[in-house]
Image 1 (cartoon, one colour):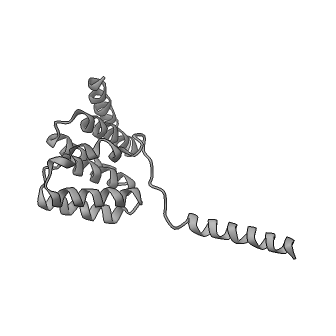
Image 2: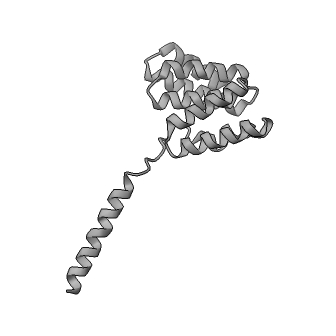
Image 3: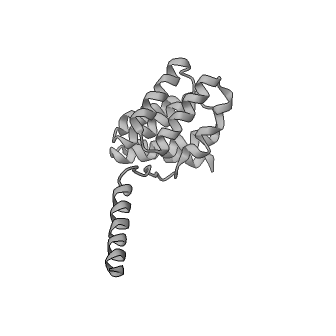
Length: 152
C-alpha cells in the first residue's frame, strides 16, 4: 500500500510540474541578456508619473513574455510623449520577438535619434546588428559594427 502511495505521489508531482511548466513561457533572451533591467530603466525617473507607471507595467509584461500587452502599453506611452528613447528601443526589441527585423531597425533609428545616453545607443546598435543579420542586411551589419567600434 505504501509503495502504491509513493508511486502515485511521484506521478502526481511529475504531472503538476509538467502542467506548470507550460503556463508561463520564459522571456526570450537576446545577445544583450535582458536589457531592460539596466539600460531601459535608467531614464524612467525623467518622466511624469503616468509614463513611469506605463513603462513599469510594460517591463513586467515583457518579463512575463506578454509581448502584445507590452507593445500596447508602450504605444500608450508614445501617445503621451513620443520622445522617450527607451520606449522606442523596447518596441524594437518586441518587433524582433515577432520576426519583424526591418521594423525593428526603423524603431532603433528613432530611439537613437532621441537618445543622448551612450548605454542605450550601444544597446540599440547591438540590436540593430542582430536585426540586420536576421534579414541578411550586410550593409546594416557593417554600419552597426562600425558604430559599436566607436564606443570601445
